[in-house]
Amino acid sequence: MSALPWLHPDRVALLEQALHQRILILDGGMGTMLQAHELDESSFRGDRFEHGHDGHAKADEGNAHEHPGSCDLKGNNDLLTLTRPDIIRGVHTAYLEAGADLVETNTFNSTRVSQADYGLQHLAYELNLEGARLARAACGDMTAKTPDKPRFVIGVLGPTSRTASLSPDVNDPGYRNVTFEELAENYTESANGLIDGGADVIMVETIFDTLNAKAALFALSELFHQRGARVPVMISGTITDRSGRTLSGQTAEAFYYSVAHARPLSVGFNCALGAEDLRPHVQTLASIAESYVSTHPNAGLPNAFGEYDESPEHMAGVIGGFARDGLLNLVGGCCGTTPAHIKAIAEAVRDCAPRVIPSAAHAEAA
Ligand SMILES: [Zn+2]
Image (cartoon, rainbow, N blue to C red):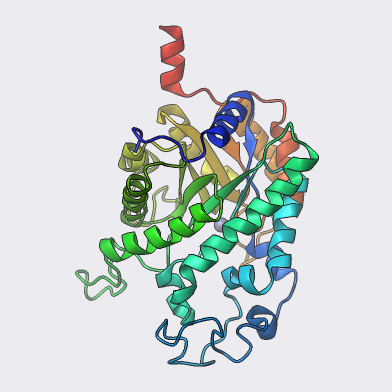
């Protein structure tokens, strides 16, 4: 990918300049913020999906027409990009006001395979396009107020609800419910929407299966070649439990070497664990990665009710330690984090120097 020119060279130059100067702040959780609105089924549907089908879809598209209204859309947070854009934009703005330099699009499940759970697979491109446009608009407003601090849109490609490396049936280990090719086609469509909507960067995030991530990285490489230009790529894996491995069984180091060929802008970890439990894995990345290092942990481990209750002060205290030890280039929050967490984290890392990339350190010393 590295031979191609940047699609938006001026934006990349601003981002690189900022990364050189300081630790950049990512936003926090989207789901947590949406839950606070206590939206019901009709709010998720809006006018467009009021009658259980998509009034905009052509007759031959999607199977929404095959099951009109048979499936609840409540919980399809990505659909709110189309039905309640005011709320999604409000979340982006709240994070920007809390100090985020980069905001993530509301597109975690905006792939064809994930939207198929709701019979809305035909919306995949549109959800990504509009998701990026909303984030772009929120960033544009904020940058206009403080032009010395540019804001950036991270177009998010989520892991999907399928796993390419593992069988969902323990009695049939050879079975797969998704193929590499299918995932690559999904990611191509979604990434095209994100880029057309104005994403500055694409982040392949919450990677629990490296093969899924490789399908995304392959799709990005192909579409950059088709477009004759690329955008920076961020890669963020998930250590799923205290065993210190991803769901597909890799340690932090193994994971890094599986994705380093994509020459990402950054590699990191997010979700699943709180900051304390993620620290040794971020430390491993920080010691080996020839790219920037990011982390956006959950607000601790979920409690018995599936809620996250680590306070902004506590989380910021732990992350401040990461920053003082030189482990970080980008940091934010995942599940359970709010603008209060992001504000506290931004304050905790403000006076810390960003991590120096090891190869760059060697080159400068030589
Ligand atoms: Zn999370």
